[in-house]
Image (cartoon, rainbow, N blue to C red; front, side, top):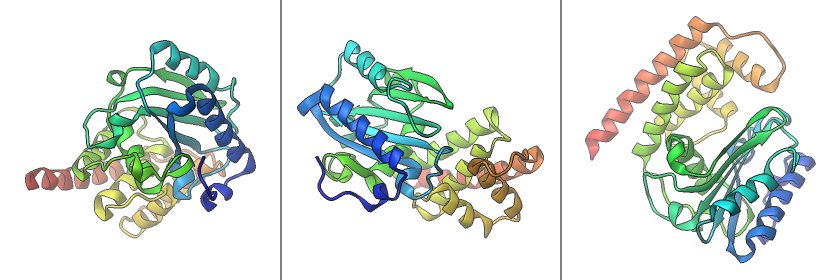
Length: 265
């Protein structure tokens, strides 16, 4: 187990801390010495966790590839409500160590499990069934900001994700939100976070990224409204035209920076 508890973990609600500990216990009981590390990433690690509204993002690392029946058994043990999740849901990914140790353009996960009281159950066992861009950013967050629930510091296991890959992941994400969730608050918040990374080369919480973006666009009201929707303090829908203009502007800027990165190679 890890030594002194990370103060960021101590700042989370007790039910979240307990749930994270239970995830570790299930993984360790099942994998034994094959479990190398478990890390809390996402908003919990970046300081933007909203109880009851945010997802929990957890990444585990194992020593060997898992057999299909092992993946299915772990999914059954960890999925809500078998292991009740205290917030919106948990996005859990388990990697085999070699898949994340070096820079690789493949995802290479063993298990990808999304479940929770407000999150549809989604399970994949083969990385070919998912777009890589969903996973690059979380792996980068794990390396730089991950809270070690079990095992060594995350830098010991997670390799560096090249900046060009992360910018491309932001661009693909922006296109996905434009196509499938254009007026949702998540599209605005994730666009701000991605844009902030592209310009500043650092990953911030959604709240901090919105504060950063507010100084750069004349849409402070829209951005604050998206945060309020995320926090559950309003149910007023976002203006679709304003959201589209914002996403289009951010996408054009990200495309420009990505092209610049490509030309550097």
